[in-house]
Amino acid sequence: MMNRKQMGFTLIELVVVITILGILAAIALPKFTNLQRDARIAKLNGARGAVGAAAALVHGTFLARGGVADPVGSTPCVGTNALNGTLCTESGLIQLANGYPASATALGAANPGIIGAAGLVSVFSPTLAQLNVEGFNVTVGATASIQATGGSNAANCSFTYAAPAVVGAAPAIGATVTTGC
Image 1 (spheres, one colour):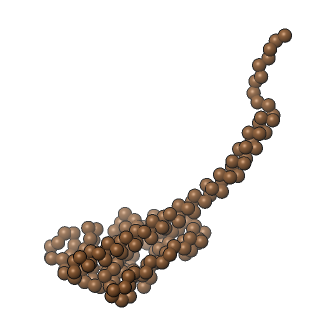
Image 2 (cartoon, one colour; image 1 turned 180 degrees about the vertical axis):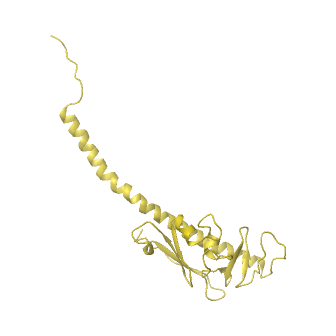
């Protein structure tokens, strides 16, 4: 008698492998889909942290300079260092509102407020188009709204920043809203 070696897989082995792959796909696919949402939330939280840190650093620099204007010919700029003036940084002038970065500064302005100070993109004073390329949408005014785009509703994937309305107050940085991410 000849001993025949088995070649290939049996039908039962194939069915078991396909079933296991189906179960793994059912578990992994929803996780993969949520990664994009998780990335937008992480981006938004990173931007919120950058805004908070920038506000604190600019305010600390304002306090350290004690309202004394930078001398003419300073590098790279000359800031007034006044309560509602400008503050010179390594990148350029930051518009102040009661000693903190302003929230109402127009995008792309020569002296940006919080958006320029936070460094959300590589450009110091970004335009809305430059922010959009990096996945952000920003509206400025008495309160600046910073949104992460790409989710189901950018308005509900955001946080806000408002410069203090009075001297001695701190800026208001809103909680992140993530229902639209």
